[in-house]
Figure 1 (cartoon, helix red, strand yellow):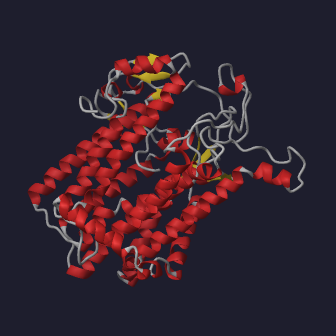
Figure 2 (tube, rainbow, N blue to C red):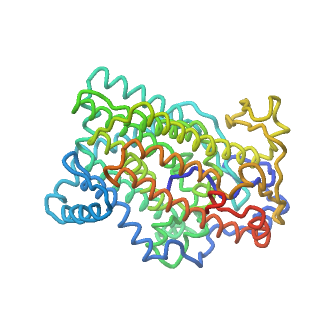
Figure 3 (cartoon, one colour):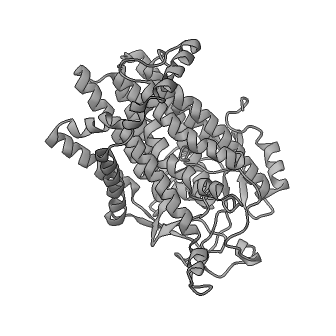
Length: 502
Protein backbone atom coordinates (compact mmCIF):
# COMPACT_ATOMS: atom_id res chain seq x y z
CA UNK A 1 0.00 0.00 0.00
CA UNK A 2 1.31 3.35 -1.01
CA UNK A 3 2.47 5.57 1.82
CA UNK A 4 6.13 6.14 2.24
CA UNK A 5 7.75 5.86 -1.20
CA UNK A 6 10.80 4.35 0.47
CA UNK A 7 12.38 0.97 0.89
CA UNK A 8 14.28 -0.76 3.65
CA UNK A 9 17.65 0.17 5.09
CA UNK A 10 19.71 2.30 2.76
CA UNK A 11 21.98 0.11 0.71
CA UNK A 12 23.58 -0.06 -2.68
CA UNK A 13 23.54 -3.18 -4.87
CA UNK A 14 26.44 -4.49 -6.85
CA UNK A 15 26.85 -2.82 -10.23
CA UNK A 16 25.68 -4.95 -13.15
CA UNK A 17 25.13 -4.40 -16.83
CA UNK A 18 21.48 -4.56 -17.89
CA UNK A 19 19.23 -5.08 -20.83
CA UNK A 20 15.66 -3.93 -21.21
CA UNK A 21 13.17 -6.77 -20.79
CA UNK A 22 15.26 -9.81 -21.64
CA UNK A 23 17.55 -11.77 -19.32
CA UNK A 24 21.24 -11.12 -19.45
CA UNK A 25 23.91 -13.72 -18.73
CA UNK A 26 24.23 -14.00 -14.97
CA UNK A 27 27.29 -12.44 -13.45
CA UNK A 28 29.22 -14.16 -10.75
CA UNK A 29 27.50 -13.74 -7.45
CA UNK A 30 24.17 -12.69 -8.95
CA UNK A 31 21.02 -14.55 -7.88
CA UNK A 32 20.68 -16.11 -11.30
CA UNK A 33 24.17 -17.53 -11.13
CA UNK A 34 23.06 -20.02 -8.49
CA UNK A 35 19.89 -21.10 -10.30
CA UNK A 36 16.74 -19.16 -11.03
CA UNK A 37 13.30 -20.38 -10.00
CA UNK A 38 10.47 -18.22 -11.42
CA UNK A 39 7.73 -19.70 -9.21
CA UNK A 40 9.17 -20.77 -5.84
CA UNK A 41 6.66 -22.04 -3.30
CA UNK A 42 6.00 -19.61 -0.45
CA UNK A 43 6.17 -21.22 2.97
CA UNK A 44 5.19 -18.32 5.25
CA UNK A 45 2.40 -15.76 5.56
CA UNK A 46 2.17 -12.08 6.42
CA UNK A 47 -0.76 -10.14 7.90
CA UNK A 48 -1.87 -13.20 9.87
CA UNK A 49 -2.29 -15.42 6.83
CA UNK A 50 -5.62 -15.92 5.01
CA UNK A 51 -7.70 -14.83 8.02
CA UNK A 52 -5.73 -11.61 8.40
CA UNK A 53 -5.92 -11.02 4.65
CA UNK A 54 -9.71 -11.38 4.83
CA UNK A 55 -9.79 -8.90 7.70
CA UNK A 56 -7.81 -6.29 5.75
CA UNK A 57 -9.88 -6.93 2.61
CA UNK A 58 -13.06 -6.09 4.53
CA UNK A 59 -11.62 -3.36 6.77
CA UNK A 60 -10.18 -1.11 4.06
CA UNK A 61 -13.48 -0.53 2.19
CA UNK A 62 -15.35 -0.38 5.50
CA UNK A 63 -13.27 2.48 6.89
CA UNK A 64 -13.38 4.36 3.59
CA UNK A 65 -17.18 4.23 3.75
CA UNK A 66 -17.37 4.88 7.47
CA UNK A 67 -15.25 8.03 7.34
CA UNK A 68 -17.64 9.37 4.71
CA UNK A 69 -20.94 8.41 6.33
CA UNK A 70 -19.97 9.17 9.92
CA UNK A 71 -18.71 12.69 9.22
CA UNK A 72 -21.16 14.90 7.34
CA UNK A 73 -21.85 18.63 7.11
CA UNK A 74 -24.47 18.23 9.84
CA UNK A 75 -22.42 16.25 12.36
CA UNK A 76 -19.05 14.68 12.97
CA UNK A 77 -17.66 12.66 15.91
CA UNK A 78 -16.05 14.97 18.44
CA UNK A 79 -13.74 14.93 21.43
CA UNK A 80 -13.50 13.69 24.13
CA UNK A 81 -12.97 10.03 23.36
CA UNK A 82 -16.23 9.01 25.04
CA UNK A 83 -18.18 11.26 22.66
CA UNK A 84 -16.26 9.88 19.73
CA UNK A 85 -17.09 6.29 20.71
CA UNK A 86 -20.78 7.16 21.07
CA UNK A 87 -20.83 8.66 17.61
CA UNK A 88 -18.84 5.71 16.30
CA UNK A 89 -21.86 3.56 17.06
CA UNK A 90 -24.08 5.90 15.05
CA UNK A 91 -21.76 5.48 12.08
CA UNK A 92 -22.17 1.72 12.30
CA UNK A 93 -25.93 2.12 12.61
CA UNK A 94 -26.19 4.08 9.37
CA UNK A 95 -24.31 1.33 7.55
CA UNK A 96 -27.02 -1.19 8.47
CA UNK A 97 -29.83 0.67 6.70
CA UNK A 98 -31.12 -0.30 3.26
CA UNK A 99 -30.67 3.27 2.02
CA UNK A 100 -26.94 2.95 2.62
CA UNK A 101 -26.68 0.08 0.15
CA UNK A 102 -28.96 1.73 -2.41
CA UNK A 103 -26.73 4.79 -2.42
CA UNK A 104 -23.44 2.98 -2.84
CA UNK A 105 -23.34 2.81 -6.64
CA UNK A 106 -24.34 5.00 -9.55
CA UNK A 107 -23.76 4.61 -13.27
CA UNK A 108 -22.53 8.19 -13.60
CA UNK A 109 -19.87 7.80 -10.90
CA UNK A 110 -18.69 4.45 -12.26
CA UNK A 111 -18.33 5.89 -15.76
CA UNK A 112 -16.54 8.96 -14.38
CA UNK A 113 -14.05 6.81 -12.47
CA UNK A 114 -13.46 4.57 -15.48
CA UNK A 115 -12.79 7.61 -17.67
CA UNK A 116 -10.42 8.96 -15.03
CA UNK A 117 -8.37 5.75 -15.01
CA UNK A 118 -8.38 5.70 -18.81
CA UNK A 119 -7.15 9.30 -18.85
CA UNK A 120 -4.11 8.43 -16.75
CA UNK A 121 -3.34 5.42 -18.97
CA UNK A 122 -3.52 7.58 -22.11
CA UNK A 123 -1.21 10.14 -20.50
CA UNK A 124 1.27 7.36 -19.69
CA UNK A 125 1.12 6.17 -23.31
CA UNK A 126 1.46 9.49 -25.15
CA UNK A 127 3.38 11.91 -22.91
CA UNK A 128 7.18 12.00 -23.24
CA UNK A 129 9.22 10.56 -20.40
CA UNK A 130 12.59 9.10 -19.52
CA UNK A 131 13.08 5.38 -20.12
CA UNK A 132 14.71 4.05 -16.96
CA UNK A 133 15.66 0.51 -15.96
CA UNK A 134 14.69 -0.89 -12.60
CA UNK A 135 16.71 -3.04 -10.23
CA UNK A 136 18.08 -6.41 -11.28
CA UNK A 137 15.48 -9.15 -10.95
CA UNK A 138 16.05 -12.72 -9.78
CA UNK A 139 16.68 -13.93 -13.33
CA UNK A 140 19.31 -11.25 -13.92
CA UNK A 141 17.08 -9.09 -16.15
CA UNK A 142 15.84 -5.55 -15.63
CA UNK A 143 12.54 -4.00 -16.63
CA UNK A 144 12.24 -0.65 -18.38
CA UNK A 145 9.87 1.98 -17.01
CA UNK A 146 8.49 5.15 -18.61
CA UNK A 147 8.73 8.06 -16.17
CA UNK A 148 6.12 10.68 -17.02
CA UNK A 149 3.94 10.81 -13.90
CA UNK A 150 4.97 14.42 -13.24
CA UNK A 151 3.94 15.43 -16.76
CA UNK A 152 0.62 13.62 -16.22
CA UNK A 153 0.02 15.64 -13.06
CA UNK A 154 0.80 18.96 -14.76
CA UNK A 155 -1.42 18.20 -17.75
CA UNK A 156 -4.24 17.07 -15.44
CA UNK A 157 -4.11 20.31 -13.45
CA UNK A 158 -4.15 22.32 -16.68
CA UNK A 159 -7.23 20.35 -17.73
CA UNK A 160 -8.94 20.93 -14.36
CA UNK A 161 -8.21 24.66 -14.54
CA UNK A 162 -9.51 24.87 -18.11
CA UNK A 163 -12.72 22.99 -17.34
CA UNK A 164 -13.32 25.09 -14.21
CA UNK A 165 -12.76 28.32 -16.14
CA UNK A 166 -15.13 27.33 -18.94
CA UNK A 167 -17.81 25.42 -16.99
CA UNK A 168 -17.57 26.77 -13.46
CA UNK A 169 -17.47 24.67 -10.29
CA UNK A 170 -20.03 22.07 -11.36
CA UNK A 171 -17.53 19.41 -12.57
CA UNK A 172 -15.56 19.63 -9.31
CA UNK A 173 -18.74 19.61 -7.21
CA UNK A 174 -19.70 16.36 -8.97
CA UNK A 175 -16.84 14.69 -7.05
CA UNK A 176 -18.15 15.89 -3.68
CA UNK A 177 -21.77 15.06 -4.47
CA UNK A 178 -20.88 11.55 -5.71
CA UNK A 179 -18.12 10.84 -3.21
CA UNK A 180 -19.57 7.57 -1.89
CA UNK A 181 -20.32 6.29 -5.38
CA UNK A 182 -16.77 7.10 -6.52
CA UNK A 183 -15.46 5.13 -3.53
CA UNK A 184 -17.54 2.17 -4.68
CA UNK A 185 -16.21 2.50 -8.22
CA UNK A 186 -12.63 2.52 -6.90
CA UNK A 187 -13.31 -0.63 -4.86
CA UNK A 188 -14.80 -2.37 -7.87
CA UNK A 189 -11.81 -1.41 -10.01
CA UNK A 190 -9.44 -2.71 -7.31
CA UNK A 191 -11.20 -6.08 -7.15
CA UNK A 192 -11.32 -6.51 -10.93
CA UNK A 193 -7.70 -5.46 -11.31
CA UNK A 194 -6.56 -7.87 -8.60
CA UNK A 195 -8.50 -10.71 -10.24
CA UNK A 196 -6.97 -9.90 -13.63
CA UNK A 197 -3.36 -9.95 -12.44
CA UNK A 198 -4.01 -13.09 -10.38
CA UNK A 199 -5.34 -14.95 -13.43
CA UNK A 200 -2.46 -13.55 -15.47
CA UNK A 201 0.02 -15.05 -12.99
CA UNK A 202 -1.52 -18.47 -13.78
CA UNK A 203 -1.36 -18.01 -17.56
CA UNK A 204 1.13 -20.84 -18.07
CA UNK A 205 -0.98 -23.37 -16.15
CA UNK A 206 -4.22 -22.15 -17.78
CA UNK A 207 -2.79 -22.37 -21.31
CA UNK A 208 -1.53 -25.92 -20.75
CA UNK A 209 -4.85 -26.95 -19.21
CA UNK A 210 -6.58 -25.67 -22.35
CA UNK A 211 -4.33 -27.81 -24.53
CA UNK A 212 -1.35 -25.60 -25.32
CA UNK A 213 1.97 -27.47 -25.52
CA UNK A 214 4.18 -27.36 -22.44
CA UNK A 215 6.48 -24.37 -22.55
CA UNK A 216 4.22 -22.49 -24.99
CA UNK A 217 4.02 -19.65 -22.48
CA UNK A 218 6.86 -18.67 -20.19
CA UNK A 219 6.21 -18.90 -16.45
CA UNK A 220 5.95 -15.29 -15.18
CA UNK A 221 8.13 -14.35 -12.24
CA UNK A 222 6.21 -14.66 -8.99
CA UNK A 223 6.69 -12.74 -5.76
CA UNK A 224 8.54 -14.76 -3.14
CA UNK A 225 5.68 -14.31 -0.66
CA UNK A 226 2.71 -14.71 -2.99
CA UNK A 227 2.73 -18.37 -4.05
CA UNK A 228 1.25 -20.08 -1.00
CA UNK A 229 -1.30 -22.90 -0.70
CA UNK A 230 -4.09 -20.33 -0.21
CA UNK A 231 -5.48 -18.92 -3.45
CA UNK A 232 -7.33 -16.17 -1.60
CA UNK A 233 -4.20 -15.07 0.24
CA UNK A 234 -2.24 -15.05 -3.03
CA UNK A 235 -4.96 -12.86 -4.61
CA UNK A 236 -4.71 -10.48 -1.66
CA UNK A 237 -0.94 -10.24 -1.25
CA UNK A 238 -0.12 -10.49 -4.96
CA UNK A 239 1.16 -13.57 -6.79
CA UNK A 240 2.80 -11.95 -9.80
CA UNK A 241 5.83 -9.77 -9.11
CA UNK A 242 5.66 -7.48 -12.16
CA UNK A 243 2.33 -7.91 -13.96
CA UNK A 244 2.42 -6.19 -17.35
CA UNK A 245 0.39 -5.75 -20.50
CA UNK A 246 3.11 -5.28 -23.07
CA UNK A 247 5.32 -2.50 -21.70
CA UNK A 248 2.51 -1.23 -19.43
CA UNK A 249 3.65 -2.05 -15.90
CA UNK A 250 0.46 -2.20 -13.83
CA UNK A 251 2.11 -2.05 -10.41
CA UNK A 252 4.39 0.96 -10.91
CA UNK A 253 1.62 2.75 -12.83
CA UNK A 254 -0.86 2.34 -9.98
CA UNK A 255 1.71 3.41 -7.43
CA UNK A 256 1.78 7.08 -8.45
CA UNK A 257 -0.76 7.96 -11.13
CA UNK A 258 -4.49 7.19 -10.73
CA UNK A 259 -4.61 7.43 -6.92
CA UNK A 260 -2.01 10.06 -6.07
CA UNK A 261 -3.15 12.52 -8.73
CA UNK A 262 -6.82 11.90 -7.91
CA UNK A 263 -5.99 12.79 -4.30
CA UNK A 264 -5.13 16.35 -5.39
CA UNK A 265 -8.14 16.57 -7.71
CA UNK A 266 -10.35 15.61 -4.73
CA UNK A 267 -8.63 18.29 -2.64
CA UNK A 268 -9.42 20.88 -5.30
CA UNK A 269 -13.02 19.68 -5.34
CA UNK A 270 -13.21 20.24 -1.57
CA UNK A 271 -11.93 23.81 -1.99
CA UNK A 272 -14.61 24.35 -4.63
CA UNK A 273 -17.27 22.97 -2.28
CA UNK A 274 -16.19 25.24 0.58
CA UNK A 275 -16.28 28.29 -1.69
CA UNK A 276 -19.66 27.20 -3.03
CA UNK A 277 -21.16 26.86 0.46
CA UNK A 278 -19.66 29.77 2.44
CA UNK A 279 -18.53 32.12 -0.32
CA UNK A 280 -14.85 32.12 0.64
CA UNK A 281 -11.88 29.81 1.14
CA UNK A 282 -10.27 29.46 4.58
CA UNK A 283 -6.55 29.57 5.29
CA UNK A 284 -6.69 26.11 6.87
CA UNK A 285 -7.93 24.26 3.77
CA UNK A 286 -5.50 26.16 1.53
CA UNK A 287 -2.66 25.14 3.84
CA UNK A 288 -3.60 21.46 3.84
CA UNK A 289 -4.05 21.34 0.07
CA UNK A 290 -0.71 23.10 -0.41
CA UNK A 291 0.99 20.49 1.81
CA UNK A 292 -0.68 17.60 0.01
CA UNK A 293 0.26 19.07 -3.36
CA UNK A 294 3.92 19.48 -2.38
CA UNK A 295 4.00 15.87 -1.23
CA UNK A 296 2.44 14.53 -4.43
CA UNK A 297 4.52 16.75 -6.71
CA UNK A 298 7.63 15.56 -4.89
CA UNK A 299 6.64 11.91 -5.35
CA UNK A 300 5.94 12.37 -9.05
CA UNK A 301 9.05 14.45 -9.77
CA UNK A 302 11.24 11.82 -8.10
CA UNK A 303 9.31 8.99 -9.72
CA UNK A 304 12.49 6.98 -10.30
CA UNK A 305 12.90 6.60 -6.53
CA UNK A 306 9.96 4.17 -6.31
CA UNK A 307 11.82 1.66 -8.47
CA UNK A 308 13.95 0.68 -5.46
CA UNK A 309 11.08 0.45 -2.96
CA UNK A 310 9.79 -2.78 -1.44
CA UNK A 311 6.46 -2.33 -3.24
CA UNK A 312 8.19 -2.57 -6.63
CA UNK A 313 11.17 -4.85 -5.97
CA UNK A 314 9.71 -7.39 -3.55
CA UNK A 315 5.94 -7.32 -3.06
CA UNK A 316 3.59 -8.98 -5.48
CA UNK A 317 0.74 -6.97 -6.95
CA UNK A 318 -2.62 -8.06 -5.63
CA UNK A 319 -5.67 -6.61 -3.93
CA UNK A 320 -3.62 -5.13 -1.09
CA UNK A 321 -1.65 -2.80 -3.36
CA UNK A 322 -4.49 -2.26 -5.81
CA UNK A 323 -7.02 -1.11 -3.21
CA UNK A 324 -4.32 0.86 -1.42
CA UNK A 325 -3.39 2.76 -4.58
CA UNK A 326 -6.86 3.27 -6.04
CA UNK A 327 -9.06 3.64 -2.95
CA UNK A 328 -7.12 4.22 0.23
CA UNK A 329 -4.74 6.93 -0.94
CA UNK A 330 -7.13 9.34 -2.67
CA UNK A 331 -10.23 8.83 -0.50
CA UNK A 332 -8.76 8.54 3.00
CA UNK A 333 -5.66 10.72 2.68
CA UNK A 334 -8.01 13.58 1.76
CA UNK A 335 -10.04 13.12 4.96
CA UNK A 336 -8.75 16.31 6.61
CA UNK A 337 -9.51 18.32 3.46
CA UNK A 338 -13.03 16.94 3.30
CA UNK A 339 -13.51 17.73 7.00
CA UNK A 340 -12.44 21.35 6.45
CA UNK A 341 -14.75 21.65 3.44
CA UNK A 342 -17.67 20.57 5.64
CA UNK A 343 -16.50 22.30 8.85
CA UNK A 344 -14.46 25.44 7.95
CA UNK A 345 -11.77 26.56 10.39
CA UNK A 346 -9.80 29.83 10.41
CA UNK A 347 -6.24 29.56 11.72
CA UNK A 348 -4.80 33.06 11.74
CA UNK A 349 -1.14 33.99 11.11
CA UNK A 350 0.49 32.55 14.25
CA UNK A 351 -0.93 29.03 13.93
CA UNK A 352 -0.30 29.10 10.19
CA UNK A 353 3.41 29.90 10.64
CA UNK A 354 3.86 27.20 13.31
CA UNK A 355 2.20 24.53 11.17
CA UNK A 356 4.23 25.56 8.12
CA UNK A 357 7.38 25.18 10.24
CA UNK A 358 6.39 21.63 11.20
CA UNK A 359 5.69 20.79 7.55
CA UNK A 360 9.07 22.09 6.40
CA UNK A 361 10.86 20.20 9.18
CA UNK A 362 9.19 16.96 8.14
CA UNK A 363 9.81 17.56 4.45
CA UNK A 364 13.48 18.43 5.01
CA UNK A 365 14.05 15.19 6.92
CA UNK A 366 12.06 13.18 4.38
CA UNK A 367 13.63 14.57 1.22
CA UNK A 368 17.25 14.89 2.39
CA UNK A 369 17.30 11.37 3.85
CA UNK A 370 15.74 9.87 0.72
CA UNK A 371 18.16 11.76 -1.53
CA UNK A 372 21.09 10.60 0.58
CA UNK A 373 19.94 6.99 0.30
CA UNK A 374 19.15 7.27 -3.40
CA UNK A 375 22.61 8.53 -4.32
CA UNK A 376 24.25 5.90 -2.13
CA UNK A 377 22.21 3.15 -3.80
CA UNK A 378 23.57 4.32 -7.14
CA UNK A 379 27.09 3.87 -5.83
CA UNK A 380 27.76 7.56 -5.20
CA UNK A 381 29.24 8.63 -1.91
CA UNK A 382 27.82 12.15 -2.04
CA UNK A 383 30.99 14.11 -1.27
CA UNK A 384 32.83 12.76 -4.30
CA UNK A 385 30.01 13.95 -6.58
CA UNK A 386 29.77 17.49 -5.24
CA UNK A 387 31.32 20.66 -6.55
CA UNK A 388 29.40 23.05 -4.30
CA UNK A 389 29.83 23.74 -0.57
CA UNK A 390 28.89 21.21 2.08
CA UNK A 391 25.20 21.28 2.89
CA UNK A 392 23.97 22.54 -0.47
CA UNK A 393 22.15 20.81 -3.28
CA UNK A 394 23.13 20.45 -6.94
CA UNK A 395 21.19 19.11 -9.90
CA UNK A 396 22.70 16.21 -11.84
CA UNK A 397 21.94 16.13 -15.56
CA UNK A 398 21.08 12.43 -15.77
CA UNK A 399 17.88 10.65 -16.68
CA UNK A 400 16.98 10.04 -13.04
CA UNK A 401 16.76 13.81 -12.28
CA UNK A 402 18.41 13.12 -8.93
CA UNK A 403 19.56 15.57 -6.30
CA UNK A 404 23.00 15.06 -4.79
CA UNK A 405 23.31 15.86 -1.11
CA UNK A 406 26.72 17.34 -0.43
CA UNK A 407 27.92 15.96 2.88
CA UNK A 408 31.00 14.43 4.47
CA UNK A 409 31.92 10.95 3.32
CA UNK A 410 29.34 8.46 4.54
CA UNK A 411 30.36 5.37 6.46
CA UNK A 412 28.77 2.02 5.74
CA UNK A 413 28.78 -1.64 6.69
CA UNK A 414 30.05 -3.98 3.98
CA UNK A 415 27.92 -7.15 3.98
CA UNK A 416 28.84 -10.64 2.88
CA UNK A 417 26.27 -10.28 0.05
CA UNK A 418 28.41 -7.52 -1.40
CA UNK A 419 25.97 -4.72 -0.64
CA UNK A 420 26.62 -1.79 1.67
CA UNK A 421 24.43 -0.59 4.53
CA UNK A 422 24.64 3.09 5.43
CA UNK A 423 25.63 3.73 9.05
CA UNK A 424 26.07 7.51 9.05
CA UNK A 425 24.28 10.64 7.94
CA UNK A 426 20.52 10.42 8.36
CA UNK A 427 20.75 6.64 8.17
CA UNK A 428 23.06 6.54 11.15
CA UNK A 429 20.42 8.20 13.33
CA UNK A 430 17.72 5.62 12.62
CA UNK A 431 16.94 2.82 10.16
CA UNK A 432 14.04 4.78 8.66
CA UNK A 433 14.61 8.54 9.05
CA UNK A 434 12.39 9.15 6.01
CA UNK A 435 9.49 7.56 7.91
CA UNK A 436 10.09 10.07 10.71
CA UNK A 437 9.86 13.00 8.29
CA UNK A 438 6.77 11.48 6.72
CA UNK A 439 5.02 11.23 10.08
CA UNK A 440 5.90 14.80 11.07
CA UNK A 441 4.27 15.97 7.84
CA UNK A 442 1.13 13.96 8.64
CA UNK A 443 0.68 16.09 11.77
CA UNK A 444 0.99 19.28 9.72
CA UNK A 445 -1.79 17.98 7.47
CA UNK A 446 -4.17 17.35 10.39
CA UNK A 447 -3.50 20.22 12.82
CA UNK A 448 -5.19 22.88 10.60
CA UNK A 449 -8.49 21.10 11.33
CA UNK A 450 -8.34 22.03 15.01
CA UNK A 451 -9.35 19.70 17.82
CA UNK A 452 -13.13 19.53 17.58
CA UNK A 453 -13.08 16.03 16.08
CA UNK A 454 -10.84 13.00 15.95
CA UNK A 455 -11.72 12.31 12.29
CA UNK A 456 -9.07 14.62 10.73
CA UNK A 457 -6.44 12.78 12.79
CA UNK A 458 -7.35 9.43 11.31
CA UNK A 459 -4.44 9.76 8.89
CA UNK A 460 -1.93 10.48 11.69
CA UNK A 461 -3.04 7.42 13.64
CA UNK A 462 -3.23 5.15 10.62
CA UNK A 463 0.11 6.35 9.29
CA UNK A 464 1.88 5.70 12.60
CA UNK A 465 0.56 2.12 12.60
CA UNK A 466 1.49 1.70 8.94
CA UNK A 467 5.04 2.99 9.39
CA UNK A 468 5.68 0.84 12.45
CA UNK A 469 4.36 -2.23 10.64
CA UNK A 470 6.34 -1.35 7.52
CA UNK A 471 9.48 -0.96 9.60
CA UNK A 472 8.91 -4.40 11.13
CA UNK A 473 8.45 -5.92 7.66
CA UNK A 474 11.64 -4.24 6.48
CA UNK A 475 13.57 -5.52 9.48
CA UNK A 476 12.30 -9.06 8.95
CA UNK A 477 13.17 -8.97 5.26
CA UNK A 478 16.63 -7.55 5.93
CA UNK A 479 17.31 -10.08 8.69
CA UNK A 480 16.56 -12.86 6.20
CA UNK A 481 18.61 -11.18 3.49
CA UNK A 482 21.71 -10.11 5.43
CA UNK A 483 21.78 -12.74 8.20
CA UNK A 484 24.41 -11.92 10.87
CA UNK A 485 25.35 -8.67 9.13
CA UNK A 486 21.90 -7.33 9.99
CA UNK A 487 22.49 -8.00 13.68
CA UNK A 488 25.76 -6.09 13.44
CA UNK A 489 23.97 -3.26 11.64
CA UNK A 490 21.31 -3.04 14.38
CA UNK A 491 24.04 -2.69 17.00
CA UNK A 492 25.35 0.33 15.10
CA UNK A 493 21.97 1.89 14.18
CA UNK A 494 19.86 1.14 17.23
CA UNK A 495 16.69 3.16 16.56
CA UNK A 496 14.02 2.13 14.06
CA UNK A 497 12.29 5.42 13.20
CA UNK A 498 12.59 8.25 15.75
CA UNK A 499 15.96 8.39 17.56
CA UNK A 500 15.70 7.78 21.32
CA UNK A 501 11.94 7.12 21.00
CA UNK A 502 11.37 4.14 18.68
